[in-house]
Length: 202
Image 1 (spheres, rainbow, N blue to C red):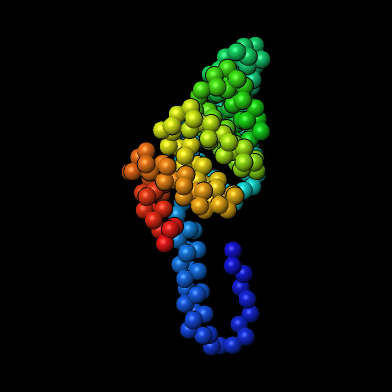
Image 2: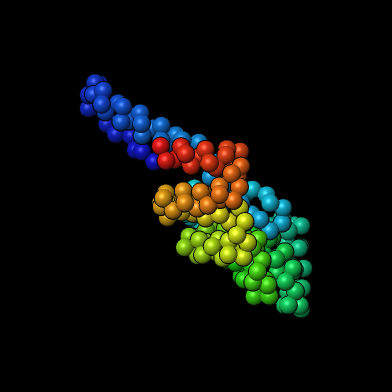
């Protein structure tokens, strides 16, 4: 965020104005693109994450969610080998931003089935929300190894590189790999990712 500074003169050099205009244009473009994080386990719904790395405040579950959590926690204690129950529990914790509990539930499901790319991707999102971007990248990479065509994992990887690790080159590379798989891949705001990448390169 650019802080306002005192204006010491009512006149500004033309060159300075051009620089400020250029910076404003770049900031405006980046700010105008909706950089989101996708959740992939259940319904491919879009989950918008904060643009900067931070732990989001946990949300109190509603009555229905609280009841389902209690039921699933009981079920996992009675049948800890039930992969689907762990996934459902992880998804509920995902929805209320209980990142650590979601990671724990997803980890339990992945011990039973380490080849679930969707769960691995969702766990990556939770790592990001808990302020662990490197672990998020690791999870997205594992998801891509499991399923090389997993677009959501590739897109989310670029988001973490761009916003959390401030590595725009790595972000562009992640998105270019996605484009090579699907040239028509779109960002959450509907913009083609290839167009977004071209503008970032300008």
